[in-house]
Image 1: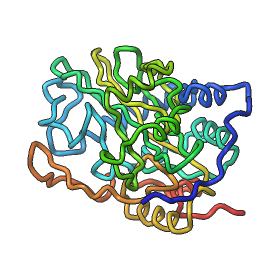
Image 2: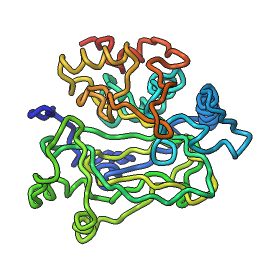
Image 3: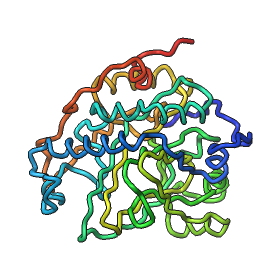
Image 4: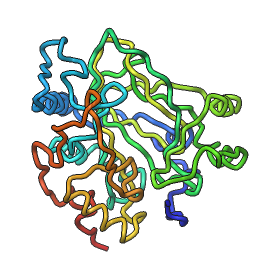
Length: 325
């Protein structure tokens, strides 16, 4: 079960005169140019190289191989969370991008951060892809109050209205507490350690009736997309023939974590295991056995192809090295 206590958080009523005001007001924001165009291209190249290391036959130059038959196990178009991808060297290099770190330092008012061990998304163009069903949800339990987690997308490819991506209900974070006070959802959800809650269509209409506009978030290569975990959100698959390429990364203050969670986080880092969107809580491995084409995936990995460099910053972000008090 999640912790019953809530760590002290920041005052979102304070005005800063920058993108933080948009995040606190709307529940999401696009921070421009957090990563250089050159590095964005580099990360896309490394993501393609990662796909090509598997023996499934994927070849970026042949669209005939851009199907599940030739790709590692993934979900919702191109979300990869298996194979220890969370700890590939390029993933950790991206997490340490100065512009990304600076944004989260500014957000939380501290340089002492932890980062999530989250996955990546490389959604390839397809003319046969079904549009998929929306799955609006939040990633913060009502047992936690205030701003406790801000999720992030490190965006590497052009992402316009038809290119797939993040969809949010603008301002819904501010109604999160009221929703759970006025709706009995006990028969549908017992809050577990992942803080996740999915909404039915009638419940999203409740937010719409209170002025929450549904918005497809657009971004350019190198932009950092941030959203409050209390904001109702989901993703949509591309209807265009453009590539979607990104890494999911969330950072929160190390002071939010308990000693027990820090110990668990450090162990999962050394074991090269992935976790949830949360950097300081919900520290557990997703041990679900994944199937590929309906069968156990014999190429599942418990180590990355390329081990990450244990820089001082990486170790601190991973909870494997303590910050000086």
